[in-house]
Length: 295
Figure 1 (tube, rainbow, N blue to C red):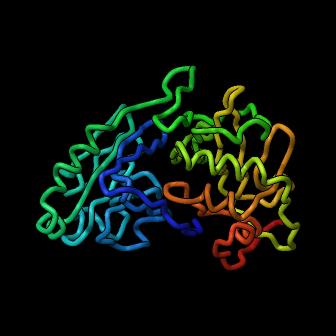
Figure 2 (cartoon, rainbow, N blue to C red):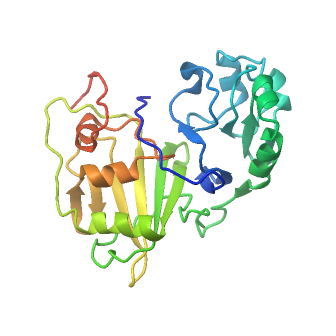
């Protein structure tokens, strides 16, 4: 997985936000960072993080360089999503977690971090007490951020969204049973209005047809749910491929992408990892070294 990073959104110290994934949602401190990609390859960090790499399972944790010994002494608090129910190895089995059906959330931290931050136990308890499920049943109900478990297919037009006061940014990834919510966040108030205005005036900015465009083999996409006076509008963002419809897609066709809109989308938990090289260049994000491609 190519791991690109984008700047995180600013927040007040006591603010909390929701994030949904694979039918499980959890509330975390808004000041915590996000970590995309393979956690095992990135090493230990002392900063609080929400891990958005592969779901943690017994197989993943045992194969990881951290092994079965549990978190290192100086590891900062980490929120990790657990995959289908499995027994966690060694010391990981004693780490605080909450399961909802076959999926859940694990919170871990090191002993040295706890000595310097004695309130971490209460913070972890609040995180785990917030864990709930969503999307069960045929109604595909959304999470707290307004993101359905499965992507909505009916797209809308950009007209009439400039006064929007709520935007849901929903990132999906291919799972064995189809595309499933991978991360979610919402914009409200002025942030939502500013973003909707940027969308409204983006016009058409097609991405160039660059030779050797490097694309990801992962099926990922972002869906934008934007309120409007005439009802909610849904737009799709194709960002991993090099096809003609890369970028923002509405009911009126592909609009490409602007750097300003892209930077608003790919921040916080909405990771830009696995973005195609053409899209990354348009967004002003690092372009990965060239890889073999069939295109």
